[in-house]
Length: 323
Image (tube, rainbow, N blue to C red; front, side, top):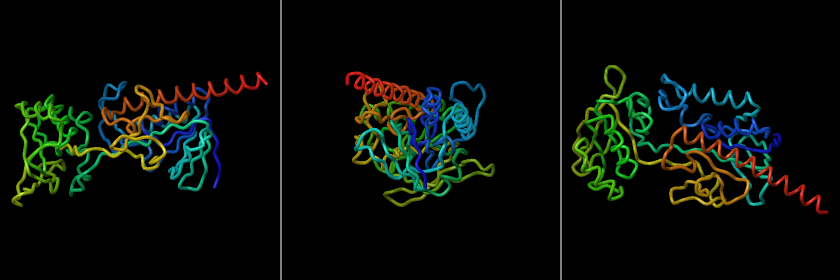
């Protein structure tokens, strides 16, 4: 067991954490990134990335995260292969966190980049066909299904928004919902029902995702939730849209969250209610959920963290001068 001290502790990696680290390291804050259970975040399980600025050709998600990590280390970030299990925010700065390893981390400011995970159905074939026809992000992957047949699974705002977005690429979008009515906002439902490219399959549950001879998704095995009748739906792509779960259990009763567990920050900033504690990326964003927006928020968090530390140092100097 060891104690690590730093001016800025970044909990979680991914685009937000690595970007915060790059900016903090270049500001000579000698940040520490505690990588967490999934170093690199959700992009490490994403294959083709075509919408991250700066790359004309498709790049691989794991490669992009490796490059971000390497860049952060190159400018002076310390990477720790650990997972934070407890954190003390009650007493203000310096903040203390304990890792699963037993190591203690002491930091003058804290940036939370623990991210969020898409909720999955848990049906057979779902994980095996990830990146091979099954996705949880239409904005990320919809472009790859231009002119193809796709399905969206879910009945809330996310599912309806995904279905509407996919009509930019496909003329044949099917929304599959296990009930006979949607939970989505009324205005979204009206847009959905008015779109001739979208059809809705009611009272159907997805039992499994089935591959074709080429190893890609070929069809969905469905069961009628009312009659129990089995059926299939041939699709080129299926988008699971039943919501996301932010990784915020560590901060329950310590930081304000919305009804879905996302950390709340001052509008337009990464600042939480506790001075010196910032949140960036998907852990606080249930709307955009993109690598580029997460990276931007990580940058903002590092810059605001630098200002927090500078202002605190100035206040100390003023107090000493006044004595």
